[in-house]
Length: 360
Length: 276
Image (cartoon, rainbow over the protein chains, first blue to last red):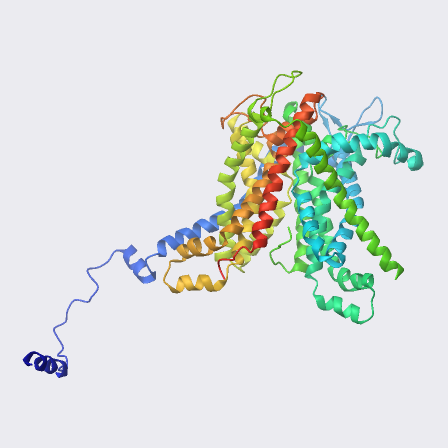
């Protein structure tokens, strides 16, 4: 009883107003080091946070570093050929004084010109575009507008697989399956039917040449153009399709007016991206293009492309000038594909508004 | 109406023409490759030219070593770059520039990368080596891994990050333990995709790893790789080597199909099932 009364008394006791004491030392202990004040002002993890952030920035900047690295190394190593030939390396060739015909690529005598390789790259790439673009856009239209739902998944898986197959396997198939078919059936037919154009002339068709290179390149760039076109077409809002249908359009008119017209810029971008891939493709083209550094009009003749000459001759290059000329071709390839890819990305970003892509 | 039907027919025709080469390629690789695929292929090194038998053990081991080195270089740097783009620099000008450059880099021909690494690594070292090949492949992986990591991290709901920060978790800790862990299935599949793409690359290896007809597991010497060996064998005049090339192509394609199928399966299941 006494205890509780005492307790109650303690609990009801009112605290007196605090008398100001003598000035005491502040609650913070003795003067802290610079790190300690820094951390206590920002929280204990400030240092690790900054370090982590810095590390992430460094790794992200490595992307720029890679571009600078490639450009720098290629420019340095191609100095020799650049100093000797200048820009005419890509436009003109040494004319043989005896036969009055150009000698394009003569490692023994030191005459180098990239003309036949530029020609070969351009011919195979444009041939590939000619064959791939209609097919890719047709496939994209089918997949986005006409395909029954159950087929959509498997078909897009198939397209993804096409994009994932390494180029060496395309080359293997081209050498052992495509070229014999060309040699036995397609080339003779083309010579017979279209030989008068001068584009299909060959006395003993081997199946190798620009046409084979163009066909295998077309198969390789199809999935890229198709998947990007699909992405661009799905980015077109449904309201456009519905508006066209509401105005009485047939299905094809709806696709043409509502979708393709809006996605035009992106489709052009997709085509340019496909072109960029075709320009740089090495292995499959090297195996079927015939590897002869000459310029000929016939699509059934052997030729050479920029990447194929590098792949073939680099490890056996004779002398520094040869190596430097090959690296200059590589530099040209690098610059051209960078420009084309920038252009294509800008066009695609214009339609998809820079959002991260899902359909790759 | 006629044009409508005609266009439908053309679209279906285009689809068939696209599917046909794929079916043809797969069928050929399966038929020609399966007949020459046996245990010898995996455990024996190539026999001298003209002799039957032999396998591609050195190429498979070489590819494994090269890809291991490439992953060591490419995956951490790529993931870190993706973390920066998604977590720290989101919406900023630097991030947009890096994203654009990564997309452009993805389109650069691989042979150009091989040339650059030849100039950077092989020439100072004085000889071709597996190290140079691994560096070339690793650098090729960086932009791809960076972009896919960024895409996966952007899918993590902002609420989760904010909850972690509200609980007092340090920023770096929240990025690693919360964001990255949530997006980890997607990040792993992104790495697998880059891995599968780089596994089939031949051109950069021609002037860095060079290829090797003998068994070699050292980083300091030229090393064989599966795609390289397929290339050499395919262009040779020997039937036996052609058969080995098809078998190697089958192994390569199986690896890639498995990777692509896994990627599809994981992303279709919903990467962030556990997050919401």
